Length: 234
Image 1 (cartoon, one colour):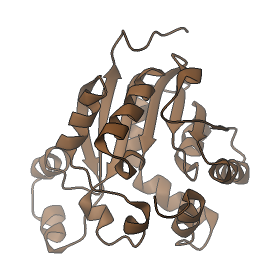
Image 2 (tube, rainbow, N blue to C red; image 1 turned 180 degrees about the horizontal axis):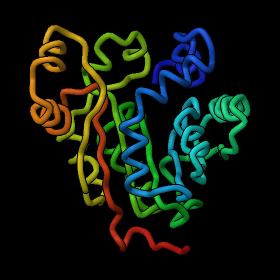
Image 3 (cartoon, one colour; image 1 turned 60 degrees about the horizontal axis):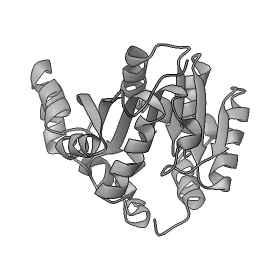
């Protein structure tokens, strides 16, 4: 990361005219992500977000009845996320934490997730982070932007983000000692083929392209932690 995370998030939210405008766009885009969580662990399940960023995803989930804790290793990021939750009057916990050492949260959650985080790290470090998440919860969900999302984003270079295809994401999950349940993709890429994709191709072909060939702006994996990695204490 060649710029502070707090500055990165300021630039990100600054693209929108107001906090509600940012929240609406972020929540609307990530509906498929939220739907995955709802199917895996219905509310009021407990959820840990690793690398909470703006706090928008954690706040949305908390507003829908989940017990959510968001962690980050930057105090300024945590303070920003807390202000975001206060703005929408949502009860959501944000705490300082280290993504590479989640021992304080071991076996305390139903699901752990990260979105837009591991693409800023090497494969080895990304696997370490996911391995730690597997120690905190029965399920792990990870999502990353694809090349289609990063190619025109002026913050890509400054954030050291790298595109990750679905096959690679699955390999990283397995390297972390997780059992991959399924991969998925969502988000409409820009470009000439986009119009053909949305208006001429059958739905089943669209689904295959998104969920198997990474033709999406975001790809993700749902994985299960192995029983020897985490022990549910609830």
